[in-house]
Image 1 (tube, rainbow, N blue to C red):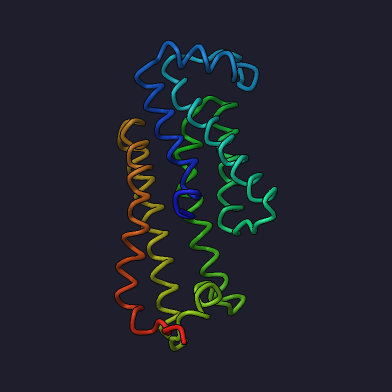
Image 2: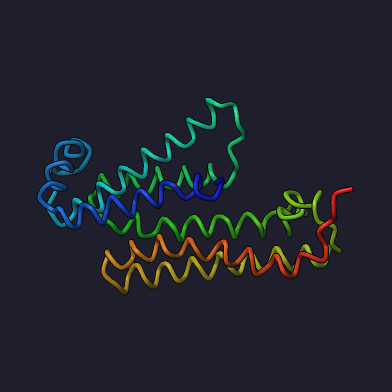
Length: 205
């Protein structure tokens, strides 16, 4: 459930874009009605409207996500804060300049921030983020924790680079689909690790 909650804005982005792509006239009308005062030039083309509507919906969904957690007095994970800030910044730039380049860079920047967080934690602050999160359930040698952290760094870097390749070598519609489907790589990545980590998981007494 938490995974679905975290990726909810991405799912909305996908469906909003696909709807706008199939209903260009209505999408343009909605974009001009709700977003024209937020863009430079105050006019939006039918071609631009789907990506701008999807971006606006994603920003609103991210705000609602954070607000829900704060109102329920629940902890907002650092990763969620990072995602929210980057979505707000790159999404706002996309809408104002009505230029999809900004939002296409957003996943790469997020993955880059995640990779940097793991590297800074391990080599600068001497704090393994994975061990901090899972150390109470899994007992492993420090060298294994370090290797596992670097595997996560490699995953984030690969995803960041693949996103750039798809974003700037394929049509926007293809990139939007890739953005959604690439989410599935995370649970697959975690499941693959679980087979290795299973021997270290401590059984409850």
